[in-house]
Amino acid sequence: MAGSALRRLMAEYKQLTLNPPEGIIAGPIDEENFFEWEALITGPEGTCFDGGVFTARLTFPNDYPLSPPKMQFISDMFHPNIYADGRVCISILHAPGDDPMGYESSAERWSPVQSVEKVLLSVVSMLAEPNDESGANVDAAKMVGSAGSDDFGDMKWYSSLPQYIYCADCGDKAFGPQLTDHSLHSTLDQLVERQHFVIIDGLFVKSDVITAERELALVEAIDGIPWVDSQSGRRKQDFGPQINFKKQKVKLNSFNGLPQFDRQLIQEIANQLTDSSVLKDFLAVEVCHLEYNPRNGSSIDLHFDDFWIWGQRLVTVNLLSPTVLTFVLPKQTRDQIEANHRICVQLPQRSLIVVSGDCRYKYQHSIRPQDIQSRRIAITYRELSDQFVPNGPFYENAGKQIMSRALIDLVF
Image (tube, rainbow, N blue to C red; front, side, top):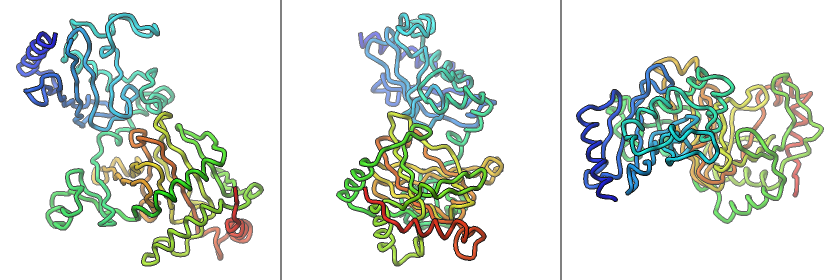
């Protein structure tokens, strides 16, 4: 069976080489193994993928073409019909025969008369015309279903914006993916000429701020408190004043302090950083525990944290698994060619990130579903803005009470 599959794949490869479809290049990764292919797909014109070139892998079974190949994008993709890990969900790749759920006709599914070329062309069409009824990526499907494909096009930054990786050792720079090794960052003159890095203000990342044993104790304490379902597949626990951000109103009725273990943790971390001003005079007045789980498609969309009540620094301790925090300029700025980029900040397990400056006030931030690989808990601390501290207009009516209650220990 494998022999006939090999002959078929060799014939298809020859045909694709002699007469390749426009915008598609495909072939074996290694000609010693015709059952593993790589494809380069140019994003369809007039879509959110226009201008990008996206890499995918195809894996063929030994009984090909009786059974379909599997296809998985290597490039980051945000699309209703592509899973967070890149797997493609499309009818032509589903096993031949009737759909047990009755959703697809047998004619839409795989059959031996199909080919690699037809699969790739179908995927190009899928990129241009997403099926929002697919549950492969729930967040992307909701966006298309509720707001239409034009709004989905506004997510172009997820897949096609130039990507820069933040270097915690440099502290104020993010580099192209080919330059993630810090030892290469000394040749800045050459890098400037090649535009291989961007300067970024307001990021501080420190690894291993707590031990593995302390992490387990924190998680046990957090899980001992009831979770509340939140948006985008997350669960949360909030401790702080109740705020109506739209009406700019604060209620303190249910604010009786912060968890003792959270207050101890931020103080211990601040004591580690006495050589830096990054947490100098930081008073946490709100703590939020957020749980992310890949089984729920957990993520958080691009957003600014509120500026009215929350202050200059956002402080987060990352527990249980690594993730990536993505920073993107708002749309009106993002459309400018010179500002067209995204900055990815890798957060190791048990790390600390402090967001301030430009990253706080100029860049929006998000965590994408594909960057949650296993359960993650974030402990985020917020301080008050200048309007709520002494000499601020809201200090006497609200700020003073908030600061006082934030010093109370809640014991569970």
